[in-house]
Image (cartoon, rainbow, N blue to C red; front, side, top):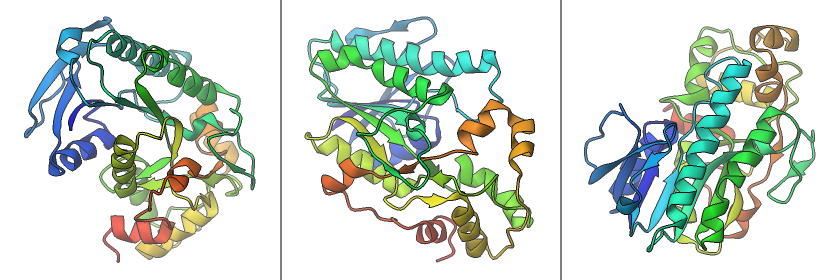
Length: 303
């Protein structure tokens, strides 16, 4: 399979490239100005979403496109300027890519486009899945716009999948890597009430789900890419403490989180959703690490 990928230097992209190449696929990066090269790839193609430029003629005849580009949602406090950056990095690039693919003589069969479970509202103990209504707030609005930006590709007849990722667990980066130092120092603890759900997924299953979505033509639209067993923040905290053999008695009060992070604390830390990956399960995907403690032991070499 000939696959084009954006966002190849991010947490998911940097793991996806060797995974696809190891499976015999030809992978080409769509790169912005100043991006570093990656050894072992067949080639790179330029684009510049901020300038609205892309060489459409060189996008012909790919079998699939995996679109992962977008600024890290939790990298900086959500000032109004930063929120505009987050929106622009997702909407502008997705519209440019989607429109360009739609104009091709030989478009790809499938576009896997990143999205997020931030689409959903916090329903407490109630399960939500791909058919649930959207939530309210900045993140839910961002996800709606992000997914709508693929409309041109959908109208062209390209199979579009909106991969609604949960919290991705990988020791090399992301949330888990940031948590390890304080937890190893005995400074880990629940956040706020600890009752908010965290819908997580191990990187191994992110890659497995990507392969599944590429190969199963019956899957389109929103697909939750999360473990079938989400846990509360308290449960996550205790599981990580057990795996690394450290106490978890240093809670972060809600007021302290809000003082440090403002609006971002409410949307990313103090609320969550109990997300079920209904489409993946119904379509036969078998999770490698469906339970949190087993996933953490595997990822941290504590098996």
